Image (cartoon, rainbow, N blue to C red; front, side, top):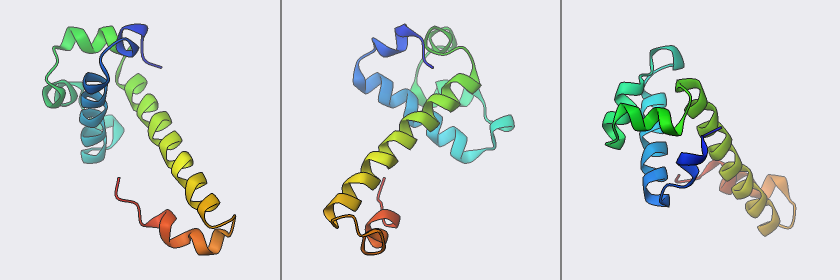
Length: 98
């Protein structure tokens, strides 16, 4: 979970950090992903990273949590739009642009 300092950042800066983390964790497996790459992509100093997150695992699991929640919300909207018909919803569920 991010530290309160991260949660008080402007939304744009939070999004920049999380986008950088997503790029890095998409590029490399967890063990080879690098905080250095995340902070370089996000344009923040190393010290700031540690004011926002404890470590690489902390940002990784926060990214999974937030992206998972976005997917769940989107999934729910698509199912509701198809009156609960899962099979008719399939195309919309698996054809997401984000």
